[in-house]
Structures are given as C-alpha cells and as structure tokens.
Image (tube, rainbow, N blue to C red; front, top):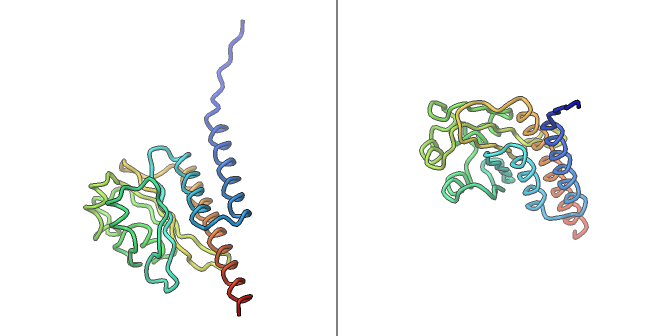
Length: 190
C-alpha cells in the first residue's frame, strides 16, 4: 500500500481568484451598476485574504476627496470615519496612496503618520495594519484606492500584495468603463 499527501492550498486559492475575476468581468460586461462590480472585487479580495476587510474608495470628480466607498464588511463606525475623507497624507492609507499615487503599506498603525488623524477610530474597530493601492486608469490617472485592513500587526504576504494590485487594476477597468459609458450617454443626449 502506498500513500500520498498533496497540498492543494495554492490550487484552491488560484481557483477562488479565477472564479472571482470571472464574476467581476461578467458584471462589467453585463453593464451592472459600478457598485455591483466593485462589490464583486471586494468579495474576491476578502475570499482570499481571510479575516481581512477590503475597501474600495472612489475619488470624487474634483480629486480632493472620496465620493463614496464600497466596503460591505466594514463596521459602521469605521465607515463613518473614512467616508468622504479628504485626500491628505494623514487621513489613512487609502487617502495617502491617492495623495502619493503609490502603494502604501502600514505594518503597525500605532506609530504610522498616515493614520495620524484616524488612528483611534481604527484601533477601536480592530484595525492594526493596512495595505493600500491607488486605483489607476489606463492613462495612469488616479481614480481611487483599494485598501485591505488587517486585525494583526505585520505586512501582507507577497501573494496578497499581488492580489491587491490585480484587484486595483480590475477596479480601474470597472470605473473607467462606467465613466466612458456616462460620457457616451451625455454626448448622445447633447
């Protein structure tokens, strides 16, 4: 008798990611509302990054604040603190990533300057570390930010960072597609 043990964790993870990406593209292709497409991206990230909360914040037209955010699992208190945040380097990781137009990793919120004005609320909601990525369009214009909030101190694994980058790219596609549709409708109406 011969036995064999095979770890299929990575294969299952890859299958979850592929299924999540298919769901996102199906919603985009079906002209589902932007909110639904972004929710499917959040679901994708949260299904792979267990015990973490994903937030997608869409930049307002003026570029000075976030217009709205998609975060189904985020607590109401944290949502109230982050909703409508102005783009500033001290208003959390997502606002900082848009301000700097680059990835922002915060291993410990206790000492990080990016969370200077939002630190206490984050601690009260159980957030100890974050990873944020700007959402960029095809031209490189920043359209918003995708953040992952973690309950423990530390940095995400390389595979999680790649997932966050891929999810931010998907969000950029969804946001640009909706903006192009709105521009086309406006042009047709004129």
